[in-house]
Image 1 (tube, rainbow, N blue to C red):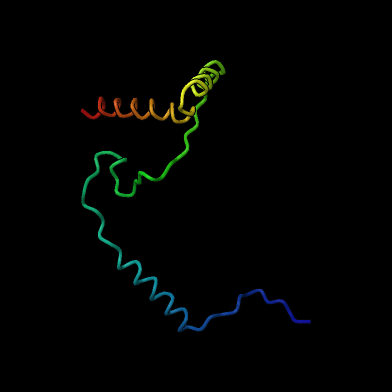
Image 2 (cartoon, rainbow, N blue to C red):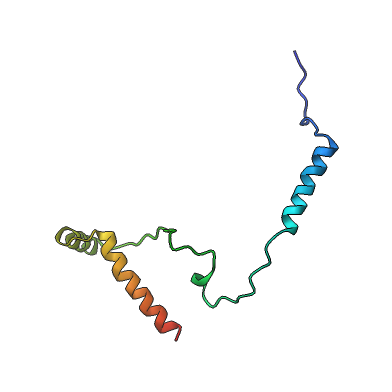
Length: 99
């Protein structure tokens, strides 16, 4: 039976040097940071329109039932109805706050 060893097999020094050299190249070849000052977080270049993030909201039972009623009696789903109103309200508030 073979004996268990408490250390991992060692790599040769050349492998380690190559690995570290590659790490140095990656850190030194970074793109220069953007000098543009962002006024608002949603203006950041990393923010993407196609990324959808969940946001939960608690509604009282009567309001949830009202929302379901709206969805049953209109072509919009509950989510589509809420998003349309919420986007409009958010944009109006942002306009008010950023004047």
